[in-house]
Length: 489
Image (cartoon, rainbow, N blue to C red):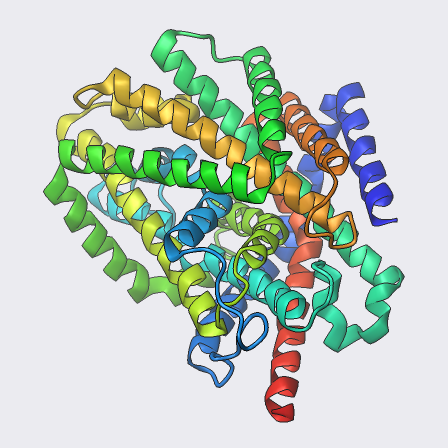
Protein backbone atom coordinates (compact mmCIF):
# COMPACT_ATOMS: atom_id res chain seq x y z
CA UNK A 1 0.00 0.00 0.00
CA UNK A 2 2.73 2.47 1.00
CA UNK A 3 4.69 1.79 -2.19
CA UNK A 4 1.73 2.19 -4.55
CA UNK A 5 0.14 5.22 -2.84
CA UNK A 6 3.39 7.19 -2.69
CA UNK A 7 4.32 6.08 -6.21
CA UNK A 8 0.95 7.26 -7.56
CA UNK A 9 1.20 10.68 -5.85
CA UNK A 10 4.72 11.29 -7.20
CA UNK A 11 3.88 10.09 -10.73
CA UNK A 12 0.85 12.44 -10.78
CA UNK A 13 3.15 15.30 -9.74
CA UNK A 14 5.62 14.45 -12.53
CA UNK A 15 2.77 14.33 -15.09
CA UNK A 16 1.48 17.71 -13.84
CA UNK A 17 4.94 19.23 -14.27
CA UNK A 18 5.33 17.79 -17.76
CA UNK A 19 1.93 18.98 -18.95
CA UNK A 20 1.91 22.41 -17.32
CA UNK A 21 5.20 23.54 -15.75
CA UNK A 22 3.99 27.16 -15.42
CA UNK A 23 0.83 26.12 -13.56
CA UNK A 24 2.95 23.96 -11.24
CA UNK A 25 5.33 26.87 -10.58
CA UNK A 26 2.47 29.29 -9.79
CA UNK A 27 0.69 26.82 -7.51
CA UNK A 28 3.93 26.05 -5.68
CA UNK A 29 4.67 29.77 -5.20
CA UNK A 30 1.22 30.33 -3.66
CA UNK A 31 1.65 27.37 -1.33
CA UNK A 32 5.10 28.62 -0.34
CA UNK A 33 3.71 32.03 0.69
CA UNK A 34 1.06 30.34 2.86
CA UNK A 35 3.58 27.95 4.41
CA UNK A 36 6.05 30.70 5.38
CA UNK A 37 3.35 33.12 6.58
CA UNK A 38 1.42 30.59 8.69
CA UNK A 39 4.09 28.09 9.77
CA UNK A 40 7.50 29.81 9.63
CA UNK A 41 7.49 30.06 13.44
CA UNK A 42 6.82 26.31 13.70
CA UNK A 43 9.89 25.43 11.62
CA UNK A 44 12.08 27.57 13.90
CA UNK A 45 10.64 26.37 17.23
CA UNK A 46 10.59 22.68 16.29
CA UNK A 47 14.18 22.73 15.01
CA UNK A 48 15.43 24.53 18.15
CA UNK A 49 13.54 22.04 20.34
CA UNK A 50 15.20 19.13 18.51
CA UNK A 51 18.67 20.65 19.05
CA UNK A 52 18.03 21.13 22.78
CA UNK A 53 16.82 17.54 23.09
CA UNK A 54 19.87 16.15 21.26
CA UNK A 55 22.24 17.98 23.63
CA UNK A 56 20.21 16.83 26.65
CA UNK A 57 20.54 13.17 25.60
CA UNK A 58 24.36 13.34 25.73
CA UNK A 59 24.29 14.12 29.46
CA UNK A 60 21.15 12.16 30.34
CA UNK A 61 20.80 8.79 32.09
CA UNK A 62 19.95 7.29 28.68
CA UNK A 63 23.44 7.85 27.23
CA UNK A 64 24.76 4.33 27.91
CA UNK A 65 21.83 2.52 26.24
CA UNK A 66 23.19 0.63 23.24
CA UNK A 67 21.53 0.77 19.80
CA UNK A 68 21.26 -3.00 19.55
CA UNK A 69 21.74 -5.86 21.98
CA UNK A 70 23.94 -5.12 24.99
CA UNK A 71 26.82 -7.12 23.47
CA UNK A 72 26.53 -5.63 19.96
CA UNK A 73 29.45 -3.53 18.70
CA UNK A 74 29.73 -1.16 15.67
CA UNK A 75 30.00 -2.75 12.20
CA UNK A 76 32.02 0.12 10.68
CA UNK A 77 35.19 1.87 11.81
CA UNK A 78 34.80 5.47 13.02
CA UNK A 79 36.45 6.80 9.83
CA UNK A 80 34.10 4.90 7.49
CA UNK A 81 31.14 5.81 9.73
CA UNK A 82 31.96 9.54 9.64
CA UNK A 83 32.53 9.36 5.87
CA UNK A 84 29.11 7.80 5.27
CA UNK A 85 27.39 10.24 7.66
CA UNK A 86 28.92 13.22 5.96
CA UNK A 87 28.43 12.05 2.37
CA UNK A 88 24.77 11.19 2.94
CA UNK A 89 23.93 14.19 5.11
CA UNK A 90 25.57 17.14 3.38
CA UNK A 91 27.77 16.29 0.46
CA UNK A 92 26.55 18.06 -2.61
CA UNK A 93 24.95 20.98 -0.77
CA UNK A 94 28.20 21.95 0.94
CA UNK A 95 30.04 22.03 -2.38
CA UNK A 96 27.22 24.06 -3.96
CA UNK A 97 26.87 26.65 -1.16
CA UNK A 98 30.39 26.66 0.36
CA UNK A 99 31.37 29.76 -1.63
CA UNK A 100 28.00 30.96 -2.92
CA UNK A 101 26.23 31.42 0.42
CA UNK A 102 28.82 33.63 2.20
CA UNK A 103 29.12 35.76 -0.95
CA UNK A 104 25.33 36.16 -1.25
CA UNK A 105 24.99 37.10 2.43
CA UNK A 106 27.88 39.56 1.99
CA UNK A 107 25.94 41.30 -0.79
CA UNK A 108 22.51 41.03 0.88
CA UNK A 109 22.98 40.58 4.64
CA UNK A 110 20.13 40.19 7.18
CA UNK A 111 19.00 42.61 9.92
CA UNK A 112 19.33 45.75 7.80
CA UNK A 113 23.13 45.58 7.74
CA UNK A 114 24.77 47.47 4.90
CA UNK A 115 25.79 45.16 2.05
CA UNK A 116 29.49 44.72 1.18
CA UNK A 117 30.57 46.04 4.59
CA UNK A 118 32.89 44.37 7.11
CA UNK A 119 29.90 43.66 9.37
CA UNK A 120 28.16 42.05 6.38
CA UNK A 121 31.20 39.76 5.92
CA UNK A 122 31.13 38.74 9.60
CA UNK A 123 27.40 38.07 9.44
CA UNK A 124 27.76 36.16 6.15
CA UNK A 125 30.11 33.65 7.77
CA UNK A 126 28.09 33.43 11.01
CA UNK A 127 24.85 32.59 9.21
CA UNK A 128 26.64 30.08 6.98
CA UNK A 129 27.80 28.30 10.16
CA UNK A 130 24.26 28.58 11.54
CA UNK A 131 22.57 27.09 8.47
CA UNK A 132 25.03 24.17 8.13
CA UNK A 133 25.97 23.46 11.75
CA UNK A 134 24.28 22.01 14.81
CA UNK A 135 20.63 22.49 13.78
CA UNK A 136 20.59 20.27 10.67
CA UNK A 137 22.68 17.62 12.37
CA UNK A 138 20.37 17.68 15.41
CA UNK A 139 17.45 16.87 13.08
CA UNK A 140 19.39 13.98 11.55
CA UNK A 141 20.49 12.85 15.02
CA UNK A 142 16.97 12.56 16.44
CA UNK A 143 15.47 10.83 13.40
CA UNK A 144 18.46 8.47 13.07
CA UNK A 145 18.51 7.75 16.81
CA UNK A 146 14.77 6.99 16.91
CA UNK A 147 15.02 4.63 13.94
CA UNK A 148 18.16 2.91 15.26
CA UNK A 149 16.69 2.48 18.75
CA UNK A 150 13.37 0.99 17.67
CA UNK A 151 14.89 -1.11 14.88
CA UNK A 152 18.14 -2.42 16.42
CA UNK A 153 17.19 -2.51 20.11
CA UNK A 154 13.45 -3.14 20.07
CA UNK A 155 13.45 -5.32 16.95
CA UNK A 156 10.77 -3.31 15.13
CA UNK A 157 10.76 -2.72 11.37
CA UNK A 158 13.04 -0.04 9.94
CA UNK A 159 10.14 2.34 9.22
CA UNK A 160 9.33 5.87 10.35
CA UNK A 161 5.95 4.59 11.61
CA UNK A 162 7.72 2.09 13.93
CA UNK A 163 9.12 5.00 15.98
CA UNK A 164 5.54 5.90 16.98
CA UNK A 165 4.83 2.57 18.72
CA UNK A 166 5.00 4.07 22.27
CA UNK A 167 2.41 6.71 21.26
CA UNK A 168 0.17 4.78 18.85
CA UNK A 169 0.65 1.12 19.79
CA UNK A 170 -0.83 -1.28 17.24
CA UNK A 171 -2.15 1.63 15.15
CA UNK A 172 1.31 1.89 13.58
CA UNK A 173 0.38 -1.31 11.69
CA UNK A 174 -2.80 0.28 10.30
CA UNK A 175 -3.79 3.24 8.15
CA UNK A 176 -2.23 5.82 10.50
CA UNK A 177 1.17 4.12 10.29
CA UNK A 178 0.92 3.84 6.50
CA UNK A 179 0.11 7.57 6.24
CA UNK A 180 3.24 8.42 8.28
CA UNK A 181 5.39 6.30 5.96
CA UNK A 182 3.82 7.82 2.81
CA UNK A 183 4.52 11.34 4.12
CA UNK A 184 8.12 10.31 4.89
CA UNK A 185 8.58 8.97 1.34
CA UNK A 186 7.15 12.12 -0.27
CA UNK A 187 9.30 14.44 1.90
CA UNK A 188 12.37 12.33 1.10
CA UNK A 189 11.70 12.18 -2.64
CA UNK A 190 11.35 15.97 -2.90
CA UNK A 191 14.25 16.68 -0.55
CA UNK A 192 16.54 14.48 -2.62
CA UNK A 193 15.19 15.91 -5.89
CA UNK A 194 16.18 19.37 -4.60
CA UNK A 195 19.74 18.14 -4.08
CA UNK A 196 19.88 16.40 -7.45
CA UNK A 197 18.69 19.60 -9.11
CA UNK A 198 21.35 21.63 -7.27
CA UNK A 199 23.94 19.04 -8.28
CA UNK A 200 22.96 19.20 -11.95
CA UNK A 201 23.08 23.02 -11.87
CA UNK A 202 26.56 23.00 -10.38
CA UNK A 203 27.99 20.23 -12.53
CA UNK A 204 26.78 22.31 -15.48
CA UNK A 205 28.42 25.40 -13.93
CA UNK A 206 31.68 23.48 -13.53
CA UNK A 207 31.64 22.13 -17.09
CA UNK A 208 30.88 25.65 -18.33
CA UNK A 209 33.88 27.12 -16.49
CA UNK A 210 36.27 24.25 -17.31
CA UNK A 211 35.44 23.35 -20.94
CA UNK A 212 32.86 25.95 -22.02
CA UNK A 213 29.72 23.75 -22.20
CA UNK A 214 26.68 26.10 -22.22
CA UNK A 215 24.84 26.65 -18.94
CA UNK A 216 21.26 25.68 -19.91
CA UNK A 217 18.36 23.41 -19.03
CA UNK A 218 19.01 20.92 -21.85
CA UNK A 219 22.53 20.24 -20.57
CA UNK A 220 21.27 19.91 -16.97
CA UNK A 221 18.72 17.29 -18.05
CA UNK A 222 21.46 15.31 -19.85
CA UNK A 223 23.63 15.49 -16.71
CA UNK A 224 20.78 14.14 -14.56
CA UNK A 225 20.14 11.29 -17.01
CA UNK A 226 23.83 10.28 -17.15
CA UNK A 227 24.27 10.46 -13.36
CA UNK A 228 21.03 8.51 -12.87
CA UNK A 229 22.51 5.61 -14.83
CA UNK A 230 25.70 5.80 -12.74
CA UNK A 231 23.98 5.85 -9.36
CA UNK A 232 21.57 3.08 -10.32
CA UNK A 233 24.60 0.89 -11.13
CA UNK A 234 26.02 1.81 -7.71
CA UNK A 235 22.67 1.29 -5.93
CA UNK A 236 22.26 -2.22 -7.30
CA UNK A 237 25.74 -3.34 -6.14
CA UNK A 238 24.77 -3.18 -2.44
CA UNK A 239 25.59 -1.01 0.56
CA UNK A 240 29.04 -2.34 1.46
CA UNK A 241 30.36 -2.13 -2.11
CA UNK A 242 28.77 0.90 -3.76
CA UNK A 243 27.97 3.46 -1.06
CA UNK A 244 30.86 2.64 1.30
CA UNK A 245 33.51 2.88 -1.44
CA UNK A 246 32.03 6.06 -2.94
CA UNK A 247 31.71 7.69 0.51
CA UNK A 248 35.37 7.07 1.25
CA UNK A 249 36.34 8.42 -2.21
CA UNK A 250 34.22 11.54 -1.57
CA UNK A 251 35.86 12.28 1.76
CA UNK A 252 39.32 11.73 0.24
CA UNK A 253 38.71 14.07 -2.72
CA UNK A 254 36.92 16.69 -0.57
CA UNK A 255 39.76 16.65 1.99
CA UNK A 256 42.36 16.99 -0.77
CA UNK A 257 40.52 19.95 -2.30
CA UNK A 258 40.03 21.63 1.08
CA UNK A 259 43.66 21.20 2.18
CA UNK A 260 44.86 22.58 -1.17
CA UNK A 261 42.69 25.73 -0.86
CA UNK A 262 43.63 26.10 2.82
CA UNK A 263 47.38 26.25 2.12
CA UNK A 264 47.35 27.94 -1.29
CA UNK A 265 44.71 30.45 -0.19
CA UNK A 266 44.93 33.03 2.67
CA UNK A 267 45.79 30.47 5.39
CA UNK A 268 46.08 32.82 8.36
CA UNK A 269 42.89 34.66 7.35
CA UNK A 270 41.02 31.33 7.11
CA UNK A 271 42.04 30.20 10.62
CA UNK A 272 41.19 33.61 12.09
CA UNK A 273 37.82 33.59 10.28
CA UNK A 274 37.07 30.11 11.65
CA UNK A 275 37.92 31.15 15.22
CA UNK A 276 36.02 34.44 15.31
CA UNK A 277 32.99 33.06 13.44
CA UNK A 278 32.74 30.05 15.76
CA UNK A 279 32.74 32.43 18.74
CA UNK A 280 30.05 34.66 17.20
CA UNK A 281 27.96 31.63 16.25
CA UNK A 282 28.02 30.05 19.73
CA UNK A 283 27.39 33.42 21.40
CA UNK A 284 24.33 34.19 19.25
CA UNK A 285 22.92 30.72 18.56
CA UNK A 286 19.72 31.15 20.60
CA UNK A 287 18.92 34.54 19.08
CA UNK A 288 19.51 33.28 15.53
CA UNK A 289 17.50 30.11 16.23
CA UNK A 290 14.35 32.06 17.09
CA UNK A 291 14.72 35.06 14.77
CA UNK A 292 11.74 36.10 12.60
CA UNK A 293 10.85 39.56 11.25
CA UNK A 294 7.17 40.27 12.09
CA UNK A 295 7.71 44.03 12.42
CA UNK A 296 9.72 44.63 9.25
CA UNK A 297 8.02 41.92 7.11
CA UNK A 298 11.43 41.02 5.70
CA UNK A 299 11.86 38.03 3.39
CA UNK A 300 15.47 37.13 4.23
CA UNK A 301 14.63 34.54 6.93
CA UNK A 302 12.06 32.87 4.66
CA UNK A 303 14.44 32.77 1.69
CA UNK A 304 17.34 31.36 3.68
CA UNK A 305 16.76 29.96 7.19
CA UNK A 306 13.28 28.54 6.58
CA UNK A 307 14.41 27.02 3.27
CA UNK A 308 17.30 25.30 5.01
CA UNK A 309 15.27 24.06 7.98
CA UNK A 310 12.65 22.66 5.60
CA UNK A 311 15.34 21.10 3.41
CA UNK A 312 17.00 19.38 6.39
CA UNK A 313 13.61 18.14 7.62
CA UNK A 314 12.78 16.82 4.14
CA UNK A 315 16.16 15.03 4.09
CA UNK A 316 15.68 13.68 7.65
CA UNK A 317 13.84 10.40 6.83
CA UNK A 318 16.48 9.53 4.23
CA UNK A 319 19.57 10.58 6.19
CA UNK A 320 18.14 9.35 9.52
CA UNK A 321 17.34 5.93 8.10
CA UNK A 322 20.73 5.67 6.44
CA UNK A 323 22.55 6.72 9.64
CA UNK A 324 20.47 4.24 11.65
CA UNK A 325 21.37 1.47 9.20
CA UNK A 326 25.13 2.03 9.65
CA UNK A 327 25.12 2.79 13.42
CA UNK A 328 24.11 -0.50 15.01
CA UNK A 329 26.07 -1.27 18.18
CA UNK A 330 26.88 2.31 19.22
CA UNK A 331 25.62 3.81 22.50
CA UNK A 332 23.19 6.74 22.48
CA UNK A 333 25.89 9.05 23.87
CA UNK A 334 28.43 7.91 21.27
CA UNK A 335 25.84 8.20 18.50
CA UNK A 336 24.75 11.75 19.42
CA UNK A 337 28.32 13.01 19.92
CA UNK A 338 29.38 11.52 16.57
CA UNK A 339 26.39 12.58 14.49
CA UNK A 340 25.87 16.03 16.03
CA UNK A 341 29.36 17.42 16.51
CA UNK A 342 31.82 15.78 14.08
CA UNK A 343 29.98 16.65 10.81
CA UNK A 344 29.10 20.13 12.21
CA UNK A 345 32.78 20.82 12.84
CA UNK A 346 33.63 19.59 9.34
CA UNK A 347 31.01 21.98 7.91
CA UNK A 348 32.47 24.91 9.87
CA UNK A 349 35.95 24.15 8.55
CA UNK A 350 34.62 23.78 4.99
CA UNK A 351 32.87 27.17 5.04
CA UNK A 352 35.89 28.84 6.67
CA UNK A 353 38.18 27.53 3.92
CA UNK A 354 36.01 28.15 0.86
CA UNK A 355 33.79 31.02 2.04
CA UNK A 356 36.73 32.65 3.84
CA UNK A 357 38.93 32.45 0.72
CA UNK A 358 36.17 33.96 -1.45
CA UNK A 359 35.52 36.82 1.00
CA UNK A 360 39.26 37.51 1.29
CA UNK A 361 39.56 37.77 -2.50
CA UNK A 362 36.45 39.96 -2.63
CA UNK A 363 37.32 42.36 0.20
CA UNK A 364 41.09 42.73 -0.20
CA UNK A 365 41.65 42.05 -3.92
CA UNK A 366 38.38 43.35 -5.44
CA UNK A 367 37.98 40.10 -7.39
CA UNK A 368 34.32 40.82 -8.26
CA UNK A 369 33.27 37.36 -7.01
CA UNK A 370 30.12 38.49 -5.19
CA UNK A 371 28.56 40.09 -8.26
CA UNK A 372 29.49 37.08 -10.39
CA UNK A 373 27.96 34.72 -7.80
CA UNK A 374 24.76 36.77 -7.71
CA UNK A 375 24.42 36.53 -11.50
CA UNK A 376 25.17 32.78 -11.60
CA UNK A 377 25.20 31.05 -8.22
CA UNK A 378 26.33 27.74 -9.79
CA UNK A 379 29.66 29.18 -10.92
CA UNK A 380 30.69 30.82 -7.61
CA UNK A 381 32.96 27.96 -6.51
CA UNK A 382 34.70 27.68 -9.89
CA UNK A 383 35.24 31.43 -10.30
CA UNK A 384 36.88 31.43 -6.84
CA UNK A 385 39.10 28.41 -7.60
CA UNK A 386 40.26 30.07 -10.85
CA UNK A 387 41.82 32.86 -8.76
CA UNK A 388 44.18 30.32 -7.17
CA UNK A 389 47.26 28.56 -8.63
CA UNK A 390 46.39 25.47 -10.74
CA UNK A 391 42.85 26.87 -10.94
CA UNK A 392 41.78 24.80 -13.95
CA UNK A 393 43.02 21.50 -12.47
CA UNK A 394 41.36 22.23 -9.11
CA UNK A 395 38.10 23.23 -10.83
CA UNK A 396 38.16 19.90 -12.68
CA UNK A 397 38.73 18.09 -9.36
CA UNK A 398 35.79 20.01 -7.83
CA UNK A 399 33.53 18.98 -10.73
CA UNK A 400 34.50 15.32 -10.19
CA UNK A 401 33.75 15.73 -6.45
CA UNK A 402 30.28 17.11 -7.18
CA UNK A 403 29.53 14.18 -9.48
CA UNK A 404 30.65 11.60 -6.87
CA UNK A 405 28.67 13.36 -4.12
CA UNK A 406 25.72 13.47 -6.54
CA UNK A 407 25.96 9.71 -7.09
CA UNK A 408 26.38 8.94 -3.35
CA UNK A 409 23.39 11.03 -2.26
CA UNK A 410 21.13 9.60 -4.94
CA UNK A 411 22.45 6.09 -4.34
CA UNK A 412 21.75 6.33 -0.58
CA UNK A 413 18.32 7.83 -1.29
CA UNK A 414 17.21 5.03 -3.61
CA UNK A 415 18.29 2.54 -0.95
CA UNK A 416 16.28 4.34 1.76
CA UNK A 417 13.20 4.93 -0.42
CA UNK A 418 13.35 1.23 -1.24
CA UNK A 419 13.42 0.37 2.49
CA UNK A 420 10.57 2.76 3.32
CA UNK A 421 8.34 1.40 0.58
CA UNK A 422 9.23 -2.30 1.17
CA UNK A 423 7.92 -2.56 4.73
CA UNK A 424 11.32 -1.81 6.24
CA UNK A 425 13.25 -4.47 4.30
CA UNK A 426 16.97 -3.79 4.97
CA UNK A 427 17.82 -5.13 1.50
CA UNK A 428 15.10 -3.82 -0.87
CA UNK A 429 14.75 -5.40 -4.31
CA UNK A 430 16.73 -3.84 -7.14
CA UNK A 431 13.47 -3.37 -9.07
CA UNK A 432 12.12 -1.08 -6.32
CA UNK A 433 15.40 0.87 -6.07
CA UNK A 434 15.46 1.40 -9.84
CA UNK A 435 11.86 2.74 -9.83
CA UNK A 436 12.70 5.26 -7.09
CA UNK A 437 15.99 6.17 -8.73
CA UNK A 438 14.26 7.05 -11.99
CA UNK A 439 11.39 8.90 -10.25
CA UNK A 440 13.55 11.13 -8.05
CA UNK A 441 15.52 12.17 -11.14
CA UNK A 442 12.24 12.87 -12.95
CA UNK A 443 11.13 15.14 -10.07
CA UNK A 444 14.44 17.03 -10.24
CA UNK A 445 14.01 17.58 -14.00
CA UNK A 446 10.39 18.76 -13.55
CA UNK A 447 11.39 21.20 -10.79
CA UNK A 448 14.22 22.61 -12.93
CA UNK A 449 11.78 23.03 -15.84
CA UNK A 450 9.21 24.82 -13.67
CA UNK A 451 11.43 27.26 -11.82
CA UNK A 452 15.11 26.34 -11.68
CA UNK A 453 16.81 26.93 -8.31
CA UNK A 454 13.78 28.79 -6.95
CA UNK A 455 11.48 25.92 -7.91
CA UNK A 456 13.74 23.44 -6.09
CA UNK A 457 13.74 25.54 -2.90
CA UNK A 458 9.98 26.12 -3.02
CA UNK A 459 9.03 22.43 -3.13
CA UNK A 460 11.50 21.55 -0.36
CA UNK A 461 9.81 24.00 2.04
CA UNK A 462 6.25 22.92 1.16
CA UNK A 463 6.71 19.15 1.29
CA UNK A 464 8.69 19.26 4.56
CA UNK A 465 5.85 20.79 6.63
CA UNK A 466 3.93 17.54 7.39
CA UNK A 467 7.16 15.79 8.29
CA UNK A 468 8.10 18.63 10.68
CA UNK A 469 5.03 17.65 12.76
CA UNK A 470 6.06 13.98 12.58
CA UNK A 471 9.59 14.93 13.71
CA UNK A 472 8.36 16.65 16.90
CA UNK A 473 6.02 13.76 17.78
CA UNK A 474 8.85 11.30 17.11
CA UNK A 475 10.94 13.05 19.78
CA UNK A 476 8.19 12.61 22.40
CA UNK A 477 7.77 8.98 21.39
CA UNK A 478 11.51 8.28 21.80
CA UNK A 479 11.65 9.91 25.25
CA UNK A 480 8.63 7.89 26.38
CA UNK A 481 10.28 4.64 25.22
CA UNK A 482 13.61 5.52 26.90
CA UNK A 483 11.85 6.34 30.18
CA UNK A 484 10.04 2.99 30.09
CA UNK A 485 13.30 1.12 29.44
CA UNK A 486 15.06 2.76 32.39
CA UNK A 487 12.04 2.06 34.60
CA UNK A 488 12.02 -1.62 33.59
CA UNK A 489 15.73 -2.01 34.23
